[in-house]
Image (cartoon, rainbow over all chains, first blue to last red; front, top):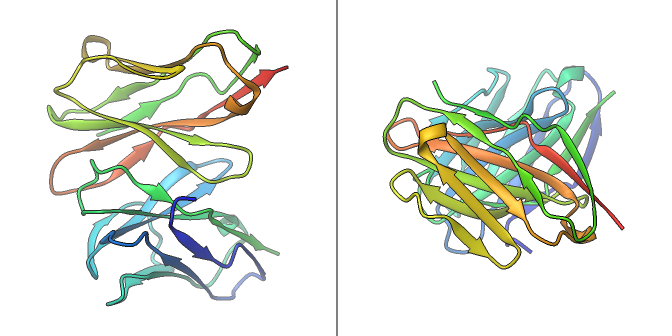
Length: 114
Length: 115
């Protein structure tokens, strides 16, 4: 058990819809990372937050947004969903904001777009 | 630009054999960090090791060992006396120190350990 909690575990929705994925980091971790894992793109870094502020941005689409709340949990919002957004979305956390820190991953949210 | 290549898409070995997973990286930075993660069939990602660019000492942890060679930009991972529980996808990753704190993953190597 990594200590990182992601909800929901599975999400099925239709094209054009909007969903919110939630992540609670390990106790004491200030940084949260979001990743997308798909068959063709592999594991892609989307965005990082550190102590409530955006720290780094990766291959995140404009239709996607995220935030980290004062209690350090984070949400990833995906809107105008397309079939290609079907993937496993991971959240990870680390103690500090530097990417050289080991990251501890949640179990992921599997998003299926019908 | 940074890049991580795991040329082996899939490997199958018989239990108790040794197996090496290759990882080659590209970076223009002199300070960077390399990682290995394991993704078992249950799906979660498990951190295995971090190595910084200034520390070329090889590391051994039980049946796992890592060989970092800056001269060939490689960070290979060897499992000795493999076990069925080692079956997983293994990801190598790279991050460059600096303002743009991102971590780039390779495509992963799927390892099958056959009983």
